[in-house]
Length: 162
Image 1 (cartoon, rainbow, N blue to C red):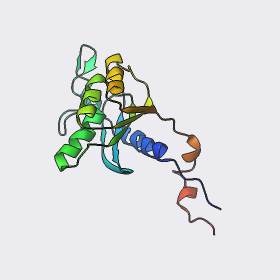
Image 2 (tube, rainbow, N blue to C red):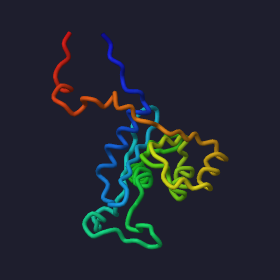
Image 3 (cartoon, helix red, strand yellow):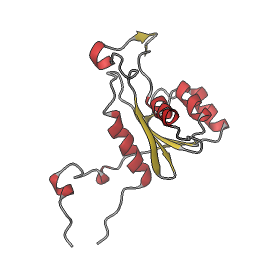
């Protein structure tokens, strides 16, 4: 009997959700996975600059209602590619929340061709219009829990009967 495999979109979105659990922001945990040719090329979550104080340790540093300490998940994924010399042109991103305007502009400049997101989050009308003008595919993805049932149980790690 052949078991159904998790579809690619749900697989990558699940990875983004898992990565969001590393977030150091108290206000919203966000994860992002950059993918090219069905391979993960980078990941990021929202948090402070490496080695700096984190919001979970010293509260958010709010200016005009925004935490200015936090680097967004999408930016951390793109920066990881820049740091290690990985091309982003033609890639896709899976992000737990619809990208903000600044992240949308950055993703466009980096050559990201498709944006998959799990939840709407203050979707900026200008960001939406930019994505439309640039013909970037934007798609909401739902994670079907049938693919998650039993993943973290002992049953999952036992050999399957032949």
